[in-house]
Image (cartoon, rainbow, N blue to C red; front, side):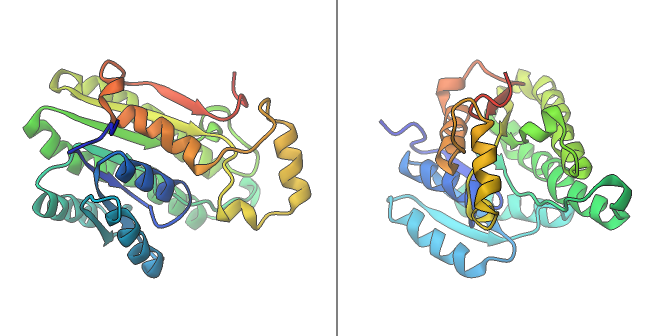
Length: 248
């Protein structure tokens, strides 16, 4: 059963990792997928072909979600190309980890803009077509770090906690128009980025997780699929921790 048949979804930051996993699962479930990338042009082009192989319409856009004007232009372009926007997944994000005493203003601003302002930019633009059709699902990627904090990640934690407050407010504002807004807070997800870490450190992290393993992009994508589909038709303003039990 294809849960997203006929829906159009936008996934930001989809050329690798979690975003890529979400885009692929959505296409498998019949969604037409518009996605963004910033620096990984070749990976973006390759993903477009992979998604199209599922028999759906797929198109990648080189766009910076942290740029207000670019985000607005992206939504206009997607509506022109696809006709509608049913699902928005705000996944794009970065880290600039360091202790607060060493953190520069630039490291703070870069993370807040890429992780939090981007969510404001795209949600504000995407609500227009959603309000018009009186339906839609907005899914924002936070992190367990946004729920519990983490030393050396004050900027990242602030941005991810901000996403939760923002999303709950949007859920209250747009609920009467049948537009839902939910949050996914992933824990330790194993991607290309974590593959570069010291394996002893990775093993220690796995040991500290009740399920004794890191998550996969597919684990996060499955939660996204639930929120994007009509299975979650009566769910809004919620935070789902996809973390193997790190938060209980």
